[in-house]
Image (cartoon, rainbow, N blue to C red; front, top):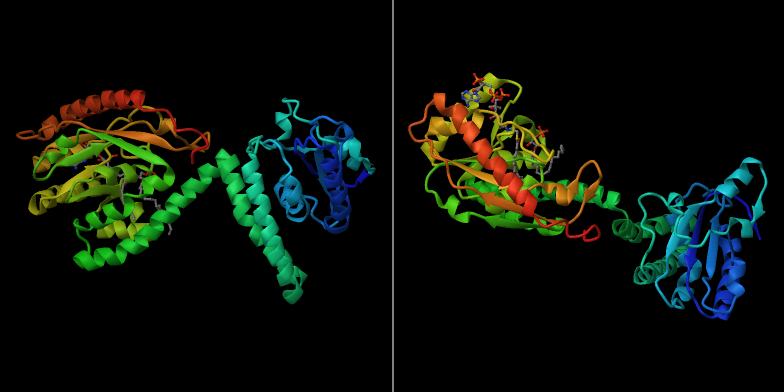
Length: 443
Ligand SMILES: CCCCCCCCCCCCCC(=O)SCCNC(=O)CCNC(=O)[C@H](O)C(C)(C)COP(=O)(O)OP(=O)(O)OC[C@H]1O[C@@H](n2cnc3c(N)ncnc32)[C@H](O)[C@@H]1OP(=O)(O)O
Ligand SMILES: CCCCCCCC/C=C\CCCCCCCC(=O)OC[C@@H](O)COP(=O)(O)O
């Protein structure tokens, strides 16, 4: 058999121990494959051996239907959809699935010739063909998953075949592609940590936006407008999100939040995921200081406004100072607590950034205590550069309050230093002891 185009190859090591089954599988694939789908399938010579040899179904996705650049996963899906369902049931052990680019074929193509399929056979699991596998794909896909995928695709194939008799081939092709999305999504989620990273991040933002859509009318019903009491609504809406992202919180020092009256909470700020930890421990009548840009974050921005969040312009110190002076007054008048991120920006460099002074001026102006809360490092489950977002545990340590009674602006610098030192050592301590990621595959 001749391979007509270079491209991606896929090899399925079925591990079938009966050569008869293997040969008939191959025969059926060759016939139907060549006719319907424009890929060529051949068996390796090895499959004629008797004893539990890998039966390789070597598909080559050609350009017969102009799909030369199609991703191998799509080619694989077609292979399953039309031919491989029954033979998967003959598998006797988990089937390693490997993709590789056929460089030999490509070279031949450059010279304008085609080459025999035997020459295009994948090198079977020699253990060192990592370069050939797309970086984001795991090497092994378990049998149960492939079976599920195959059954799903065979079912959708029936559906689309029926629909094509009434609506024509183009809509059936469209349906084919549509039905391909869910299993491909599952396969990518299962096999690619980079995909999981982006998927979880997008899901987080999208989900929060949706929750905010729900929060807006609920807040309006509860308080009729902007009110710190709306934070109760927001808190209860956001609490479950950690489960969806595979995160756990371990909180210590609850007793320190039992302080009566207004206080200022300060905490380190690693990512927008901090909102989840914040909502985990948020006391009643507590809202936050946030950058003013957040108000433009669509439904989330509106929800923040309704929750009484105080927006500051970080680029204009004088503006920020007067807003915070006003906030100190409101804290006392309305018995409100304020949560400030004294680093002033997100930071995931494994240590705390030097603190800004606003939170300490605020506490001194209101003569309210400061309660530091430390989030353990996210680096055991969330790595922005490496595109890793696994499941994991976050420790939240609530530290004893720091009194500010009798302090003046003169004391701000020492108050800042004291708070920073306490929080830094707590951060290093909780980050050290935090359990490692719950595993790269537990998404
Ligand atoms: C369902 C939907 C759910 C939605 C969930 C919503 C959850 C949302 C969660 C949202 C989370 C959002 C999270 C976020 O958005 S985090 C980003 C926004 N937050 C912050 O930036 C807070 C921390 N920053 C500060 O506190 C800064 O100090 C500010 C911004 C105020 C000034 O910045 P600057 O860069 O200028 O810093 P500086 O500290 O060097 O100060 C300079 C000078 O000013 C003096 N000074 C400072 N402050 C005061 C004051 N108050 N009274 C009197 N004086 C004051 C100070 O002594 C110094 O003078 P000197 O001493 O050198 O002479
Ligand atoms: C019109 C659509 C606009 C879409 C914008 C998407 C907004 C994000 C939506 C949902 C995310 C969940 C809640 C987010 C609240 C987190 C706020 C946050 O973490 O802001 C970063 C700020 O602390 C520091 O900012 P920088 O690190 O200085 O930068």
